[in-house]
Structures are given as structure tokens and as C-alpha cells.
Image (cartoon, rainbow over all chains, first blue to last red; front, side, top):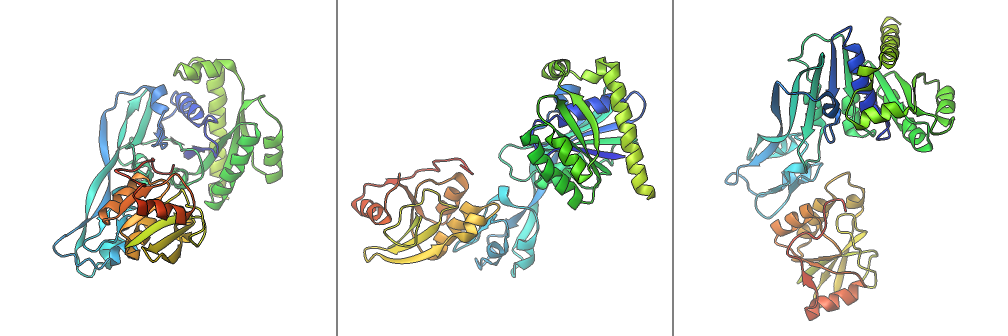
Length: 287
Length: 119
């Protein structure tokens, strides 16, 4: 079962839920936690891993053969992402804008364009606290995080896992979509405020457009109003879990601790929540 | 010589647009005659990314050797420099007045980008 923990709004508690859920489940099954928020990874602040390995993540960028290039500028005109600038001579490459689509090499009549690897970030993985943990980090100044997210989601070197929890980046743009892709279920974390609701609506629309079933976790219940509940009822989106605005959870968070590790009641609530998710994903497979 | 200048409107009486990549119009002005060719920068305004690069491409393609704008980010500056374009910055005003300042030599030549990307 692959669960993506996402939200439209930042700071609603995606990471808090992800690390607590992984920790609670690790007592009874093999669980993987993938921190796909590669622009601002933070699961490691709670898990405190010492990594078995870190590897570079690379993407392809074009290389111009300066002698073969005739300066025809077809490549630069074809580039959808403005990563090549047409000049009187060979084009200028702006590597951070390149999406590695390869169209420049495809259109070059002189075959003057080849592709080489360029490092844009790292990925690390290992076992920590009974959880298989994998995370990535995009290098500062890079514009495109999706290759690093794909690398974090690459489980070819992972042990067999009963449950995979994907901590997605906030928002509903390319990085969030990449993190959600192939998930069996999207858990959308929100807070009961107008801001939370506004961005929840976008997140629900995104999950629906990707044909991923979704449900809502309302975090910090008690700080706002009923509008998130009203929306979920009207849109037939299940509210799966309500986490109270509990100072003890906030204090554990701010100390970099995992609340579920020391609170059997919360851990048990999260295990029941995971069973509910499993039932929902299995129902979907059988129907 | 040809000067490219970002403008909020299509003619010399318009205000200089402080934005380069996402500016409204690009005026290509022949000096000293002051004949104007107006380029609508709609593509740059709507670009998901690389607006500055696209605008720099328009400047290079126009045959201008100088750009005057309000601000210029690092990628646009790199692109303009590669295209052999000199960048002058202005704090604002009407296009014709800023062109007067350029001709009088009172505009500052930018040695580097003056803002971060996506400012």
C-alpha cells in the first residue's frame, strides 16, 4: 500500500503525520517513509538517521560541439523552456532551466548536440528506528525538483515493504504531482481555517484529476471553524482522522521528537487510521 | 544605433516598465532618429519560466546593442551579456526622458544583475 501524505497548504502537518504514522506502524509491519519534499526536506530532523549511503542525482543537459555548430539557432527556437539562447554563433545554455527533454539534439541538423549528466541533488536511504527511510535534497539554485523526487521514489534497493508513506511537498504544482503519482491513496492534511480550506479544495481537485482516491486529515482541530467539514460533506470526501490542537504534540514537534513514539494512545489511533486506509485501498482494487 | 527599452505602453510617451522579463512592451528605438518598433512581450509575461531569457532573446534578435530597464535578474543579465548587449538601469520615468538621459550619458551602466531571479 502506497500512501501519499499531501496538502495544498504548507505547514498543515504533513511531516508530523508522516513520521508519526511510520513510527506507529513500524511496531507491527515493514514500513517505508519517503521524504519527497526535496526542496525543504525535514523528516530527517525527527528520524535522525545515519545514512547507509547517499548518492548523487543527475539530469541530462545538452553539450554543444562548438566546431560542428553552424549557429542556425534551431535548437534554441525549439526549446520550450528557454534554456538555450540563440546567438550569432553557438547557443548559450542556461542549464538550470533545462528539462532534459532532448528536443535540441533531436532538431539539430548538424548532430552537434549531445547530452551529458549534471548533478542537481542527492538521495540517501537507510534503516532508522525500524523504518526504511529514503530522502532527497535538491541543490540550492536548481529550478526543477522532479528528477530528485523520482529518485527518492525509486525503491529498487529497498527491502520488501508492507506500507510506503510518501511525505509530499506542499502545493499542487509539478513537485506535488510527481510525489502523488502512482499512490494508492492521497491523505490530504489540512487545518480547519479558511486558508486550509482554500488550498484543500485545490488538493482534492488535483487528486481527482489524477484518479487517486483521497481523504482528509484535519489537524489542530479546535483552532478554526466548521467550513472544512462542510466542504468535505458536500463533496463527499471522507474525513479520516481528526488530530486535536494538543499542546503536547506541538511541544514534541518543536523538540524534534515523534509524539507517537511515547504515546501509546496516539500510536494506536494512527494504526487504526492505517487499517482504515488499507481497507479503503483494497475496496478500490476489488470493486 | 538601436536601443531596446522596456515600456508600460507602446510609444515614447509611455512610462519605463521596471520589469524586464515580464514587462509589458519592448520598444526598439533607433537613435538619433527615434523611430520606434514595438514588441509586445505577451509571451514573456505568460511564460512559466525563462521570461528573462525570452526577453533577452527578443533584444538580441532585434539587433539592439543596449537595453534600458528598471531591473535585471541574474539569468537575463547572463543572456544579455552573452549576446553582447550593454545593460543600463533607470529608476523610472517616461521613455523619451530616459532616452535623453542615455544620450546625455547620465544613465548608469549595470556591471551585474541588480536583483535576484523572480524578484
